[in-house]
Length: 472
Image (tube, rainbow, N blue to C red; front, side, top):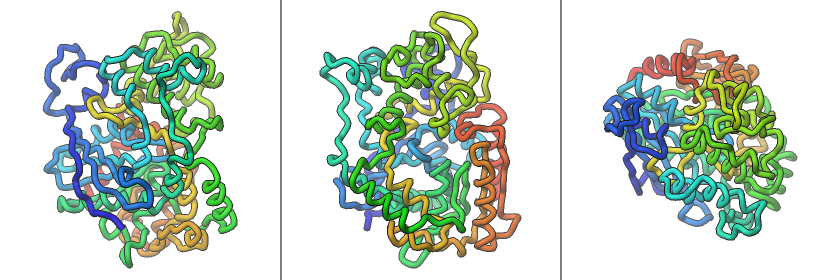
């Protein structure tokens, strides 16, 4: 089925100070003097492993892992991102965790669909090799201006037809490659995930690997505003209909419904990069005719103003709820209008989550192409309880009554009771004792706040002691 965890490429990157300074020299302080990064800043490494073998092109049978913390630390928290998300949005959180746990690493998974992205001019912009306008025109400007002939070209649905099969089985097999690599270090391995990443976590823990369950490789699971519990399996008829629709249509989630599944990811990457490089410059996105009106402030904004308005929980449209953050508010005056950075999540930290890591090409905090099959299959995981829809979809999450490991769950306002109740049900069906169940209510957080909050982050304050309690 696959080649197990053969290392293909490793890149070592400077400390996380670089993340916030994506176009300039890294500095250990705020004065921009170009000094070397402080030794206290966690090392970031990018490792590429052979993933599950599929019927698609071999170049995509790859799983990339962004590693933080000391390379000789034996304990590993592996994190799986959610819908339309990439490894980058875990990096500030990962830095906080390894800063408190010097005997742990945090490994964030960059799923194979992100290999389809074209980061050529994003990377060139971060390196100051092209202007903001050149990068914008390459990705978006050409859609409204046919005189722009050198531009981004997305693959057609048929060119990436193989992605119609990138469902839970592929994701879980890729996760297993990462878990086996972490397990070889000899310490505790915890698998965690945010949102749909929580569903993937439950799927892996309950997955049948030739008679054994994925949980046998783990010391615990951590569910961050996501997961899966038994009792509400997908209907066979719906699974069959959805599967047929994917087979005849696009492989990817089209959030805006305009036939450009990559557009939200591109908007996010360009917007967040603009915040980091030119926060006070007038926003090109605001003037772009094809940017939805409900993402535009009532007045012409700066890059910070545009980006903050588009994803802040109080002004962003409901269809972007998966990336809402408590960022602050549009400034009361200014032309262009700036941003009052008075929310729970600093806007530059939010931008760092989504823009990507300086010096590492092709990785950001979004997934431009999210496979519809992965979301479809997630509906049949059902807390690892076998059901007929699993047989239709080839989902092998069947060991939901056999779990014997600690469970951590964090729920935001978005979870609305589902996450903690799901974790309780998951524990009950396997008779996991109450003392092995850590449930945390963060109901004043948005869905994505747990990765973005910088000071007094309830997720960090509760997850770190839980990890420490596992014993190593």
